[in-house]
Length: 121
Image 1 (cartoon, one colour):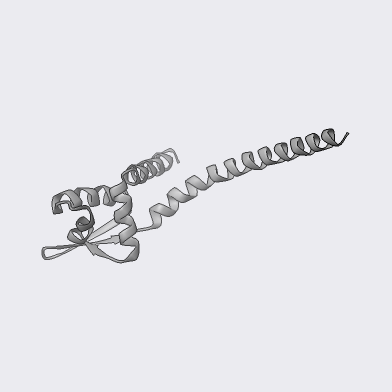
Image 2 (cartoon, rainbow, N blue to C red):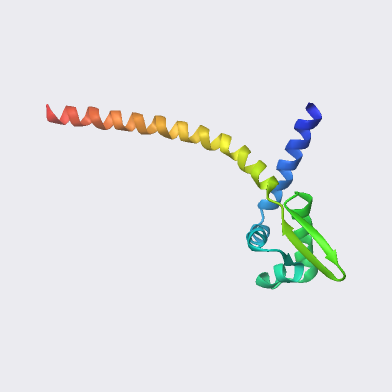
């Protein structure tokens, strides 16, 4: 069980590391539309094949992208399962903050109601 937890945290760490870079996030956005070659991924950023390939390698290590090599062509495909895992982890905190904000809203409404009653008297 401990190994599973460590492995899961390592996956999340790799995903969040990959997502920390705006270039890699943009590449994932492009790959959400369709499969692309490394050269096609590099084009919007005016970067070399080697530079784009390094970004893709980080995405591959995080399990976010798979690369298929056909001759000299490196074709990349989005693997969204790890994004779903990261989203599930984030949703726990979304629920936490929603509960806190709901509590704050209730307190502010009660305060406004009390102030309205006080101003009427």
